[in-house]
Length: 228
Image (cartoon, rainbow, N blue to C red; front, side, top):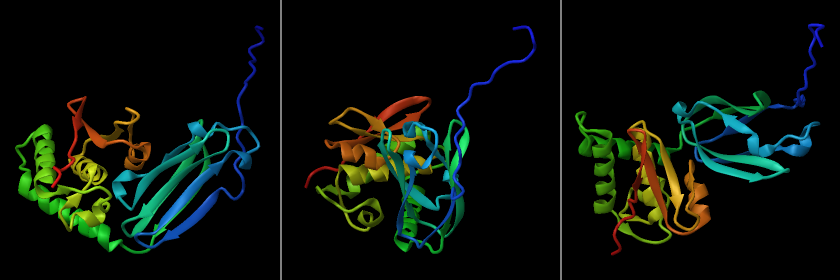
């Protein structure tokens, strides 16, 4: 209007006083962190809420999200290594909630699984290998050291034996990919969708497999071991 003034239209999301929580978990324990639409005065779109944290610390695993539009978004975490970190739930750049996660002890089973992976990687990878060569070697290792069995244990236990189903094999493959500092997603043949979290793909049903980002291209890796 020429006055030099302008009107701002923005949605203000009020943060409740109880927006900071401290969560204490022993290694191996799980916790659901949730944002509920009804807790906020403004109508927030829970599908647009993000959870931010330092993934490099490896203090906990993200077991995936449960979202109900108009109701809530939930993230389940499982404690792995002793230490502390912060998780922020954000919406439109604003912090809705902050959790301080204190993991009071190591999850020995998980530490054993990590050590096993490092040992395997030292056997099958060399510094001169390309990322694709490393992923090929990891897939070959899984398929030559394990036999398919439906309903096998999760990776943290299965590595001690020689049985793995497609979900466990995908977990192995995904963790080898993460160790090689690349991105992995998990797919379901039933829906044809890919997800950042294994539990999302396995919950879809059908056969579970991985795709790995190599030279800016997604390459399918199905490490499902042969049937006995």
